Length: 365
Image 1 (cartoon, rainbow, N blue to C red):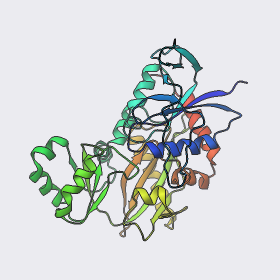
Image 2: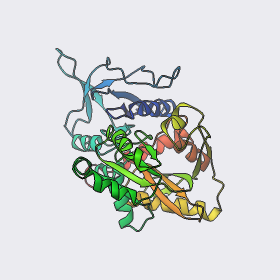
Image 3: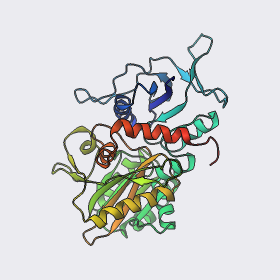
Image 4: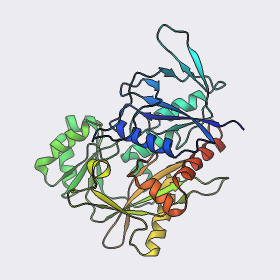
């Protein structure tokens, strides 16, 4: 039997470009090459799609990877009947690279994880791994994510949304609203991940600079009250054959003494964190984490996979922090480690993503 053709798409225009490359390197190393034919497609920082065979997708000498834009330029034709990729070299007649069976969009952040590439693939009539357009967009935007969860009766912490127009025209009113959260607060881009642009703010004096730093990544900012508690993560996979979604064994993230919180450097660049899988929690709390993770996944209409993050407070409450519809799967990432502890190793995990996507109908569902 011929192998299933999988287009692995990575890189992208967001500030999480390098993390996407790291995830792609890990996934392509784990995928079953006997079953799947992989077509690596890099999206350069300027948005160009290229055939990315042989590109470096790991951290070397402290340097993060990046998609080189010197590969064959590619385009996705909007023809639901073809499901193919087209090579579009300047001065040459466009030629097909062949059909693909499924796309694995390993993109993090805006212009990838936020429903944009999902909409592109829907228009092209190509199956893809992960959440659809609305679920991707709502999950990427922390403000709408929290609104959906609140509407479903799920526990979230206090927060304030800072929109671009408000910050420019009603800054004092915004600051007064944030002050009601109490100090410290965490200031975050509303639509970014990998701890990009996040600041912990201890007083009003540092607030404006923190908001401006977050606005470098996204004009829409969310400010969250700091929650005292342990950081717990849990993986979710869509069920096969109409089975309900299922949750992994959770993990507790412990940040090292050199980091005040779970920042970018702690996640990717040094030994600033440890994972406890399973976490040192009562069995009933672990089961509640898993139950709430599936509820959070279903509330947003997610598909394929996601990672759900919590705080577990000293008084025994679980508070939802955020969801990632395309979680990082680098060598340091919790998501594949949690599923390995649950009995699904990395190759089987990737196989599960692809089989779920192939079983899904095209169009509205």
